[in-house]
Image (cartoon, rainbow, N blue to C red):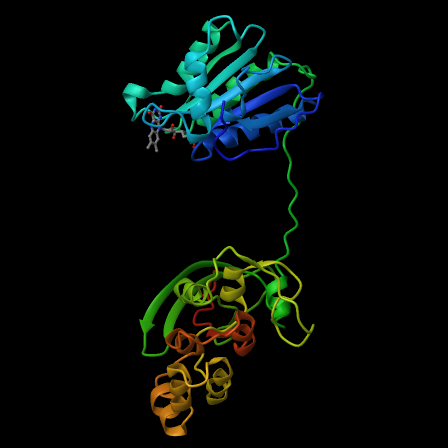
Length: 373
Ligand SMILES: Cc1cc2nc3c(=O)[nH]c(=O)nc-3n(C[C@H](O)[C@H](O)[C@H](O)COP(=O)(O)O)c2cc1C
């Protein structure tokens, strides 16, 4: 049998394995359920090897361990990584799968009523006809409903009960630990005195040509006192569409992870720590401040000599053009580098050119009751 579909795990199998979980999955649901089975089995002291259905050779399913088959149907057909297996199982001869112990869990969607669970049903029935021993009734998961995971948990419990390993051992609850640091951004930005607080609401009250006025309702942290007329410092984030423009200009994805290395202490960027490109751009640099004449002049180094972009930069560097077309219109560096498409500016140079994000100040208009307005 040929093999198709991405390998889920290397197929090298150690003798300590108690079961195989074979997934047939296009969009990942069945594969995720196979991993859920493996995790739960692991907590019971059992080792489950995961692979895709097409990894099965012409001899059929292994006989030295139980086999869980977790698969879906698409228009009544198998997933790409189960196509050869399904073809094989359709044609397998009666009696050839004696000694195999198996269970099938299907994921299906009732919108495909005439072929609901067609593939898991076919596999389950054919394996039995070929002499394999069904150790647990076929599970019928409804991918359209929240119960899918409960349905799988019930089937999984049955499968594990019938399988080797220390089935008596109670499964431990899965656990995770999280270390949360709320100080990193403000410390990097040298704004150590800021404290986190909850924003109850954030409403735009007026929009000028340059500024937007907002009304914020905040729940102050315990111990913070205020009076009407006090100022409060706020650490903002750049608007998502602006961050997206930078990502597009520098051909980055929002979830690319960036680790900046440089001279410690020389700028307020997060050095030596992995951070998503989105968080870096949203939280650390001021993306919309007007570009200075010096910054425009520095762009020359990234332009090809004699190019249109080099000529444009030259023009913008003339003081009267700079004033009328750039400064008076509050053009920012991002808009310029978007316009100058052939500019070969490294992302790190763009970051260095940007001022660090500034604290905004808001005045307290009401002091009568918390939350604070
Ligand atoms: C285009 C399409 C066709 C589908 N056809 C069927 C079908 O014939 N029978 C069925 O029971 N479910 C059908 N489904 C539902 C999928 O089998 C179900 O969403 C399943 O959980 C997908 O598993 P996977 O994420 O592991 O690929 C279909 C879903 C899509 C998107």
